[in-house]
Image (tube, rainbow, N blue to C red; front, side, top):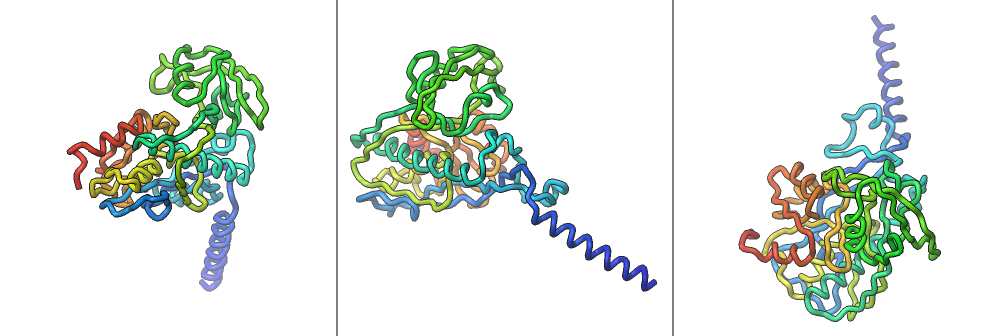
Length: 334
């Protein structure tokens, strides 16, 4: 009996050690993990602005980290709401974690500048903003474009036709059929090169062509006064919409109407709201914060948010101007 008891203890210790080792060792793939939405008021400072209106604007972040071997082997050990993302999707060109962090930091800075332009223009301020092209934020690994495009590329022309904004890019691609070859002129490391990519069918509408990339705005911007946004180590372009809402709020526009408003979505200089990733996790994060409404890009992003809303009011928007209009309706009450 003692031998059996001793063997059980040894096996238990070995099992615990094995679990600890598997928890410590990283796997190749990544996890998207929900975070809690956070108010922006203390992170945004607008010269001459004020923040005495009731309600708050929230941004929604997600944790992106490498999966641990234990989580790969035993899926039930993953955090609630987590989604597995393969390394090929998140780092299709084999980039390092440090390189990806630098790209996310640069994307965040561009997002802040674009949000300031959009908000100030909506409020009637004169802002100098010169679009320089369409920044490639990420490329799906299973599309033909993955062979030619890299995150950080800036598209400046399609088949010789200049494009300067994401809206122009989508319009040009929308004129093609799925399977068409298109010639892109891109700026990479300040050098212009040409690549040819083949479009694919939009998963939501097989008649429409897409390239399979997530984009943001590249531009030269001069603001009439200082706007400072600091989210610490948070990176990426997806907080453009809440940034613009908070800037407008601090400049006297009542965008919250006493409510707690969360938002996600990148912005183009013309105010178009651009789809982003991680909507499942972001919707869970908005729910955890107990906000009243969640503004998201219309289309597939809105569908993903609705699937995970669990009672949270989701408001799909296509532009910053529409976001302001939706928040000004009688339906938004708290």
